Length: 365
Picture 1 (tube, one colour):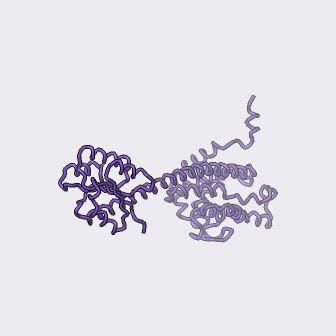
Picture 2: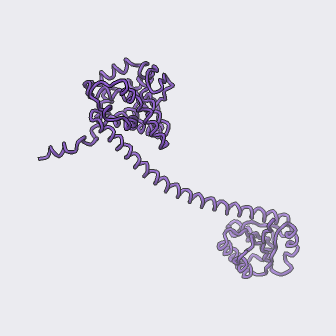
Picture 3: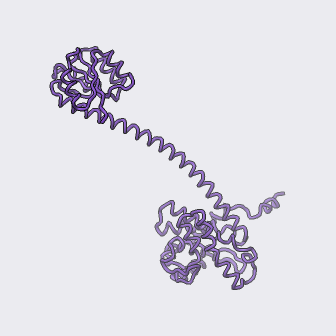
């Protein structure tokens, strides 16, 4: 056990001798000086003592001034005064001013040991607290830097994601902008259903944007075929949820995103694909997206039929309540006026870029 070094400042060689012997028996390493210059030199030296005991010195003006200077120069040094007169008001004023840390009776060595141990422990805790505080500041600075980097990466990722889905939509001009519209529909439906967590809402948006990513692996000859698909071609089309899920699983996408990609063609009655899930076996985010997807499909032009208005879409969705769609999701959709859904569609599509930039060039004189 390492001994704590204690410096005793006494007026002469005899003062404090008994106390020094007593303290030595309790694992303290004692050193004695008889003047303030000696004490200051020792406190400023390497391997300085851990505490200062001022033993039976007259607390005149110069002594009080020097003690204040010591505390100012060595703020963590425990300074304990053992006054000649225990009733000396000067000693109490030093304590109240913070120039010293404790008062103890020179004739009560047990009290001196208690004061020493208390002050040394306090100093240890203050040092630890400062170290923890510095470490915390470094950690917060590193965390802030990492958060900035993460935010920048998130912006790049989001932009790349939207550009990818725009590129996918452009493979088929008839469905251009579909992913952005259904992403917004899905977020609104999720909020109506009581989902408030911003991270989950953002994951639903990303899942909706990426729902058809598996179609990357479907040949254009099938994807853009104007006529009826053969049974074999249809089977290939039906693979796109699993193909898409396989793609995003490689980049460790979050659960809500994966669920929308894999299960967006499941039906509430169990007649969907790829797994034939039914009712609440289908993740909520996939049930939400299924309705959003149908709403956009019904109100958009397709080669095989004309678009219908939102009133017709509402009727078809309600007619398929409990069959294709989750009843709770239908109720959430029905709780908003149709003009709200139309406004969402309008505000989303009006900010999309032109399909062919040459179209805008041709309009100019």
